[in-house]
Image (cartoon, rainbow, N blue to C red):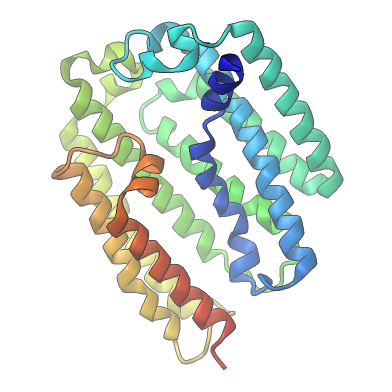
Length: 292
């Protein structure tokens, strides 16, 4: 039982919130209430959960020794010895096989996206995460692939390419924020725990965050009045304040509360950010599905 609990922890179910990006095409192409489209997207979400969990296990297997030297990651099941590497390898392979088989049943295009995601994340775990800037760009590519996976699952008619741009910029913002939090927490021992941090400074990361946060706001604002499938009265612009608050709130948590090393934990614990996201979602659904 303890091994199963340790395995589940290593699969990172809290990280599955990232896979919600698969629902992007469903919501923004106005197909949320079409049963077949919803069920296919929901199935795709679970496939991505399995594939991403396999990647997390493989990543922990590759980083066992480094994690043992980290003040927080040393408590992970593999690093602490709660989970055997042999069991972890078997679970990762099984999850990959299930996700490939299920992905093939949904569509070949979706399967291609899943395989590309797994390959990219394996390359990230092995090499790309050690290259400054490229590491965060790779993380952003993973989010874009999630969005595109949703596009391959349904007959998309009006999904705006602007959402790919916004997704990329938002992922870069969170990625650079995470690197900043790690660098601030680990201080002079940062490069010993994560080699790529040797290629960053707090000032440089602050500049990156300033650039991508401002560009995210501009890109989203442009989307709200230029995408072809939005109401002609531009009511989508009413959602901009919620996006602004979310970006500012995360920056506040980084700079004042010294959090941000795990954006998914913030998402699941910070009540003001949760309220902003829920209000944004409510506004989007109202504008897309209830507006005349």
